[in-house]
Image 1 (cartoon, helix red, strand yellow):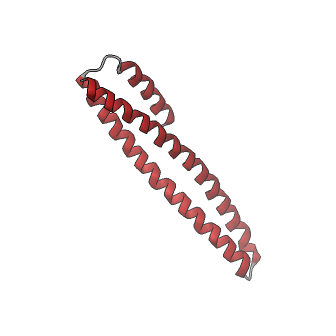
Image 2 (cartoon, one colour):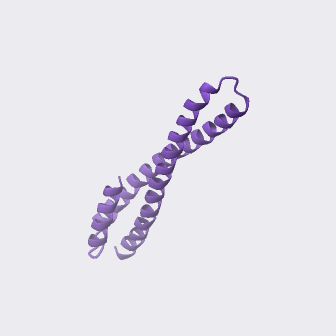
Image 3 (cartoon, rainbow, N blue to C red):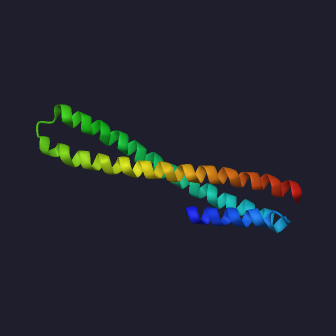
Length: 114
């Protein structure tokens, strides 16, 4: 997805020098696709962050009250996995958000020129 957005940014930067109505319509369509992708990644990121918080709370609860310490290790491993995945999803969503915001600027430019 990151490569797709970067390639599209290069394309629209070049193409916006000679704007046409077709280019403006195509850009609106691509923005809608990227917005949909951003929404899906937002929901996934929120799921992973919520799961990370829940497993972190479970880890502390188990550490404090569990009669069997053997369950503590798998919960810690799962918490670490969710924490790492959350970091990568936040990084990816940050990329999507910033680059799609840049594409909004081209939307304004294209619609003013055409």
